[in-house]
Length: 350
Ligand code: NAD
Ligand code: IPM
Ligand code: MN
Image (cartoon, rainbow, N blue to C red; front, side, top):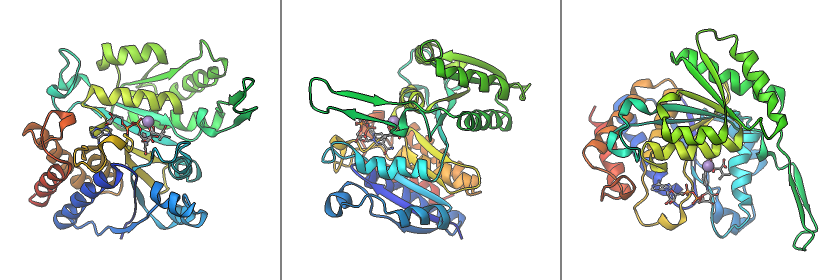
């Protein structure tokens, strides 16, 4: 029986996770995967009340006792330095060593893209973001804080092992999904250390003769993602560039409200979450789009071996979009709960 840990988190996180769990309930009814759920209270409220972010013992349990983790979002204006979210979210990515951050962007409906003249087939890409290194490692520090002489340093960490494993994952994924093109984004023209990425990309990529490889500077890639998204199938890049490019890619297909993601390390627990954050201005208003959370649940079910349940969730989500059962971010006038109810009902009836 698969064990699922659920961390709804902050802001709109609990609202969108509630809809994903409604859909999971419908999946239980229709497909009987028998998933056992345990909820965790970690987030800003819990941190502000107790000073606890995510206890080490619970982090250990997440790694050993669970098959998957479903997260809403973490981030709250009452925690100005975001330390609880760093401990919880980046804590899971780093400590569980979930080095693959998989962020697909597929256009479900032509009406959802802000790009002129792009068709459904033109935008179908996946970003593999390195998830455990880069500028996110908090190596560095601040000296003379708050004075005119303040100095702050943030080191970007790239290891041969870390770069190689994400690049290899991207090529393996391309091969398994019959994609013929992998593009790597770096900034090797300005940051000499990125030569490591180029070397590893060349060496690893040469083992995949059927897959074309291309390196791009990230600034030009950002432009081309908007100009000609059809040239991209699989993108592999570092932690910060992947963070930025994945928000950009999301708006090409309808926005953050539709963007799911997976945090993986083959053979270990995987964590699934919307790409979006806690969107504080939307919280508590029943307006947040639950589809990113619902599609993240789909990625989870697919990973747990329930591909037909995942496909059903995706079909139901596409139907909701076609029929205008959408929240305001997608042009509709439905609420978070109404969209979740509708998708859950579709799934239940298969
Ligand atoms: P955000 O993703 O919360 O919001 C960015 C924009 O997208 C806003 O205009 C928001 O209204 C819109 N949006 C996001 N999700 C939506 C949804 N489901 N439906 C409709 N519209 C949606 O990013 P932000 O405002 O930069 O960050 C807010 C907080 O969330 C910060 O504390 C940030 O650190 C945190 N954050 C957390 C995660 C995560 O938990 N994985 C990801 C990103 C940001
Ligand atoms: C994301 C978020 C996080 C990140 C923040 C909240 C630390 O933006 O999941 O994309 O930068 O990875
Ligand atoms: Mn982000």
